[in-house]
Image 1 (cartoon, one colour):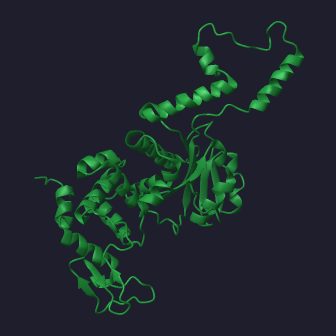
Image 2 (cartoon, one colour):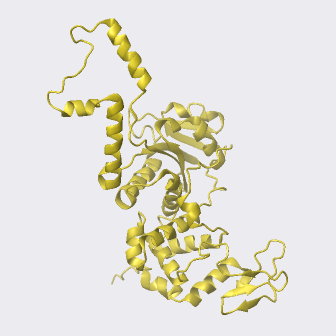
Image 3 (cartoon, one colour):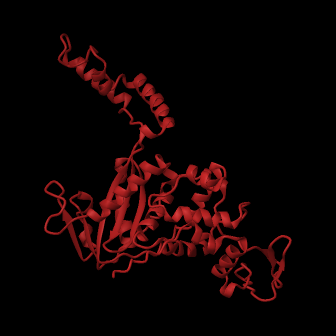
Length: 376
């Protein structure tokens, strides 16, 4: 008789059994931050871990040597948060197990909090995943870039902005060719009209050059990706606009995260023509002839981009450029633990909570786009 295969489930009930009370959450965080859970002074010069006394009314410790006061959440993403740790750990559960992320609106409904609070919580969680500085990929490594434009049909605010942008451009350059085709009977101005001389044509060219080119409403965001086959990925924002996809921005990223004895696999783009000077071998596939040619392909990194675009289209709709890198950190982490169980995904994420990092709300909303260090 065949026995049923046992499936290990890890749902919200199992998660709350681990972190359902404030004491369990504080005990786990103490063991994560301090050796054997013994409170240690955060001062680098002091580092005193003995005879620190606890002030129960304020839930803080005081160092017996330097007399500085510190708490369990000092320097972490939980610092100065009025929310209980049980709510934070429940947010970590929702943030980790969803395949394509969770929006701040949905998290606010699940936790019964305000949307802006949920938005800030999610950004704090994403900030802990910024730990790819020492990521080294090797073996067969696929590289490629993609362009992600906003989806106007999903965002009413963008639609109104686009209408204002188009109206401003029409005042300067006139109607676009697209609108001319839509409007019936609109007289098209061509150089073949009667009475148009060469001097008039040249004058029109000069006037058009002085006005400049018609500006598009939203330039696509350029994302560069590196995938080690049967390994991890690294995604990075290059900027906004087609011109950002150039080797001056791409080569330093590859050199920083890929070992020199690796095999680089790319498409036939001219960006990667000189990449073979820095690595053991360079293979490329000509997409005009096929997606797989003699076993050479970059379907892995293109699959990563496909899921990234589905995550944006189905969950977030529109992401600001200065926040885009944090969403890439989230997608990279979720992709790297894709084959693991829900329990293992949670256990993979939790050690990031011990990193010394605090994100203030004022710093988050005033953030501007700052590309990662391109130094080789």
